[in-house]
Length: 336
Image 1 (cartoon, rainbow, N blue to C red):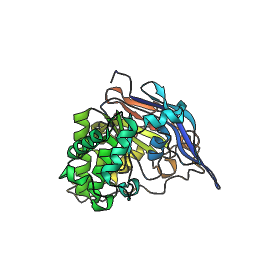
Image 2: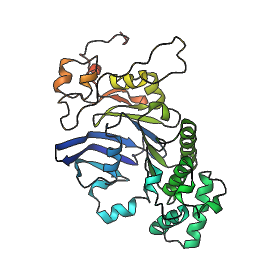
Image 3: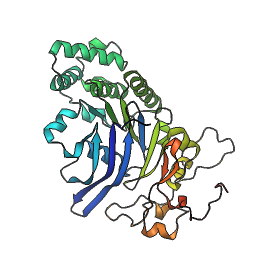
Image 4: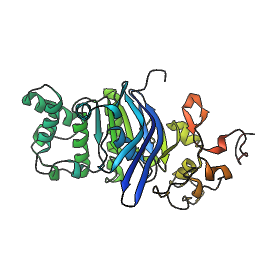
């Protein structure tokens, strides 16, 4: 893509300061997302996916702090804006859907009232016009009998319908960027697919950009344009979605894909779990964070983290692994 990114994040580094020490949650993350693009951020729990986006929106808990880095949204560094400017931007230009809608919605207010309040807070609009807007949004996210559901409370909706309410709230001010933080985690697989396809359909219709955070590669195969794979607070690999699935280059990405059931597996081949455990971010490895679990680790991986190697510029494919260095030993299956 030749146009300037909608959001450009560089060297983002975030830590949490606890009684046990500094938890280095995000370490030097770079990524871009363009207008109208769907970017998937995947990785195991604790890999830094959600904290990366919470850092960009400055929604960290009191003991969290972004140490360094930049996050330029339409040319403005979000990390340098005043709190008032950020409050105007959040929910307006950039919106977020959180994991559990039941804890995100106020149980004492009707869902319609909560969205009406959001619209009035950001737009110069009358209450009646805001109410009409909510009905339109409920119809957009396919909530049946939209007008009559505005007076319902969160507990009167199913999990899938509550998530649709959260999507409607996020879309209420026509954001340019929507961040969806594991929006299908608590839902069964059928509803998961419905919600993801709904997000993709709305994105195609409205032309906004979406960052979709998940721990499951299979969940986002159908709906994303590019994927960023994170591990140990670091971006390990990024590529266009089909290229990453067809040709994963980082050992961690290969491990993730090998541990996912494949419907095309007719030979009864067993799944291959990744051995070991994620790193302790109180004491992260000096070199590659995946080194202790990697069967291809080399001596340099112990002491020095790899830079980002460009695999295929046409596919936006980059991987942070020393195996891609020209002097690295050739691996089985590599081109001669």
